[in-house]
Image (cartoon, rainbow, N blue to C red):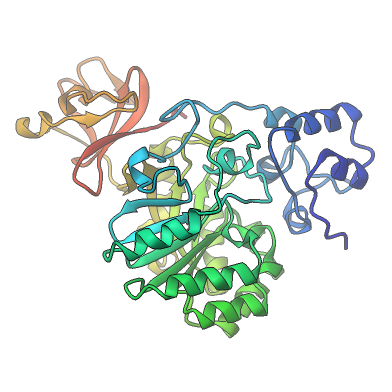
Length: 417
């Protein structure tokens, strides 16, 4: 089996010489600015033509294979012109250091700047794959972060995230795990990775030994579809169970239009994950600032409709993740109920952080006579959703207005189906 990672137009042309020259040229132009990579494991679960080339009709292939027409897709501006998702300046407490993000009081995120794949749904794609990006790693980033953690005793968790945290060798991981474990008030180490759908060999016996040696608490796998629970994925989960049985294995599942926005597909995915010892943990609404946002984002209400039969008691709770959005202020659970209601007048006088930086009154987001939302009609100033999660519009665009974990109102860009 050819296991070479395809990382350039030249690699693709050498592997598939029949692909038209103009397509290879377009891939080459894209590669001048953006990195990408396709592994053999990815090719194995994608639908392919008689030459082994991924089919344009396969939604999974569209996410990972460099089809020229998808490479040039533009993402809508979300919070700023750089397409950043929830990267607010206040979340980065070390000046000039973009590797450490501190949003929640008790945990801090170390963000890798490396990744070998191109996943059009990933909210970190721009930062880690853009060769011209402004947020670059620096040699002192790691040591600065350790100093910061030592000075803040409330931090009890360190999360290794991406990019892709497992692109570094085990020797570097061992040093980093040792550094973190040298801080007495850090009790939990977590890893968030997409290697489970790209490179399961990364979960080797030596890696699992490291997890055991340094008591890694949790590994969360990004996964989308039942096809990605391959024999190699299952074997990797068995290695982790044998080598470090105490590590909690979770799955983060983005919900994408036309890819996995189907209740039965998600039920099958959740069941296959549980069968190999992985607990489905999050259903993630696709974030606004991604390369594939225009194509794959579905509305929050549509996502709720898809996952409601899974989250409800009609499906085993062990296999049912929490449905969330991820916004400026952090994560928010998507309620499965939607109601029309009136708001207490004192409540309505609260203000909302809007995506343009203004602070409009909450009262301005009620629906009035003549408004229409997915077939609902309104006779007076009413709200739809729940008292802390409101479906509404801002400047004629669909948005969610919700109360975040700090008790503040903020806005999340939604889409129309």
